[in-house]
Length: 579
Image (tube, rainbow, N blue to C red; front, side, top):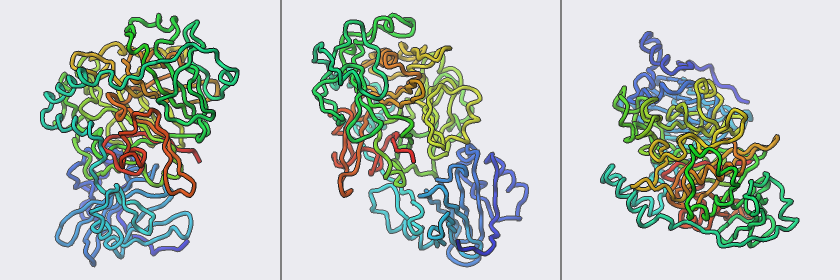
């Protein structure tokens, strides 16, 4: 590996970003100026506990000062490069490392980013002006959210308008023009025009299961109402390709997929949940109506020994700042629960990062946008700053996680967990790569570890479940749960074609889930999920949707899976193979 002359870069290091500002203030003139100390969005950086900043002055060339900020040293993926030119104009560039083992530094002689890797061929001196700035200037017409720079070692993130299906874009325009009035109008439209539009009703009959159907691998079958064990459900709308094709599947049984080892599909009806489950926790769960009892639930399960998850912020959502629903608390600042209402200068990519493409097999929609991500009603609206939902991407904390909210956690070692966030969990943040909260739990473990319905499941306002203007909750909904059976762990994603939180909780109880999180809702696009793989030769992508009617919500008019190749306006999860 080649060596560089000793660097004279002025470094700022600390577990708490606030130390960066304090040190610069106490020692003026001893080092190059700190970008962090002069940032117009300081609260965003104070939230980051593992920052590392390098500052360097230059006497020659177009730039008089450069700052290189590693937003999380432990994760080592997301950097900012801040430049000040000879006229005092400042610009900031978002850089993503293609390999988290790369070491980035600033040269003290010329305006260059020094890249050092584990292999000699990874070592590269990247001229800032020609290798990054000019490359960005030549890429204004690109429709992608990134640009390879510095000999292909880094990705430069480009701000984009994310893909948005027409029906979702129309709703966003109404919200933007009319605020809460627009939100009420959208709810009215959902109630009168779209309720049950996407509901897929059961049209199959009781059958006798074959021996082969009863001996499938994967997760154990869901518990089924006595006398209905032979009930099978049509696969007509299921688009996942099963290892063995069949026109119907036993309700609640898991079936392996043909093209994805360790991934399984299942169909279920809330009306097939055992009576003993329906009779439990009636103080938390409402009785199910006839429509949702008969509305199909489509699920896929991934073996967490073989797969892990990632999460990405969309180009627009969820966003940061105060939610308009936080009206019952005294706000300690005008900007947001963490003290800021914008992500600048950060630019979320809005798509699966290219360094994960080779091992990514699927994506699914994540949670609520900012305006819905806090509590307007009930106990949760009165403390903890109305319980705004937290999220972290690539080790960068964008919104602080809040106690009492269910959290999907992705650790740096690939471990996936789901739990209700509690006091003391903040100590885990240095080990977390991604996390996403989205409200109170549908299911959480009791003192024995068994999953039971959350206390707010039947409460429209207090649970912040969203729905129609007159509190009707039945709509298409997406959700995920953690399923633990012996030493096996599965992450389950479920699309409920027409359900309330009560139907979701009962269904997850039947499957034996330990904890469950509600995700997005109101259409197959908002609750989208698909799997995909390259075709032979790698010239195209073969997609398998969870449900047929999700096809109108894919990017590039159905040519590519949503969230993969094209930036998207909303946040998402991606499923990838472990190394």
